[in-house]
Amino acid sequence: MKKFLLCSMALVATSVFANHCPNEMKAIDAKLATKPALAAADLSKVKSLRAEGEKLHKEGKHEDSLKALDEAKALLGI
Image (cartoon, rainbow, N blue to C red):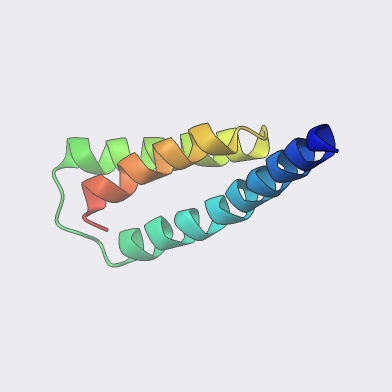
C-alpha cells in the first residue's frame, strides 16, 4: 500500500509540473510581447532560457524546465 501511495504521489507531482510549464511559457511570451526594456544580452538570455524550458518540457524534464523558465522570468522581472 505504501508503494502504491508513493507512486501515486510521484505521478501527481509530475503532472502538476507538466501542466505548470506551459503557463510559465505563456507568461514569458506575454511579457516579451510588451517589448521590455532589457539589454540585448539579457533579452537573448531570456529567449534562450524560454526555448530551453520548452525543450525540457517536451522531453518530460519538467523540474528542469521550470528552473530555466523561472530564471527567464527573473530576468524579466516577473
